[in-house]
Length: 221
Ligand SMILES: [Zn+2]
Image 1: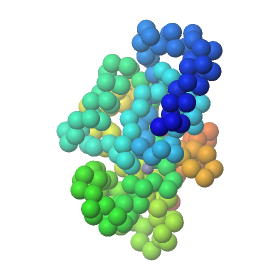
Image 2 (image 1 turned 135 degrees about the vertical axis):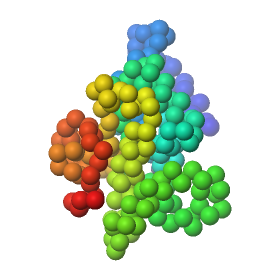
Image 3 (image 1 turned 180 degrees about the vertical axis):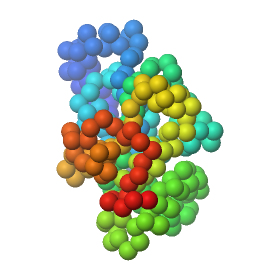
Image 4 (image 1 turned 180 degrees about the horizontal axis):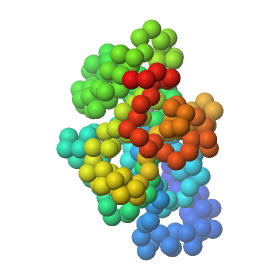
């Protein structure tokens, strides 16, 4: 805790003061550009990796960056609804990451055998597990973990599309969905490219995930 308290002192003296104008503006309200859905993992820092400020990102975090389909769970749904209906965000990013413990648990369910809440939560990634079982037999463990992270982001994008506020905004072409993976080792961010049918460096990825996917590492479903 000492580190946190010291950090607050440094923030107040070295950051808040010099950026007083920014924080003053935030008193009047927020107008974030994007809803950023990512893992709770402590190694992922959304504002740091995107070099954004307070007020720029509306954030949902949970183990595995999962998005329960509409009607099955209220927490994420309420946040998504608020971001789209009240804050009018124009972009939703689902950002997975390498070395994700939740993805590891999908591949090795025995890891959560004694964690009933986590076991239940990971059922929202059952689609991911089934895609892997059906389409990626025989991959070695490291490759399977990487594919799991990517396929899970794509599956969660599909879950996201079941939310009425998302459907309505997509139909009106007022919303763009983005599938990202953050690489803990290199700091790189890859995004799914519709044109290329795979994850590519984010600067080359074009304008989000437009179609209801058809991708499996070069294979057609
Ligand atoms: Zn994670």
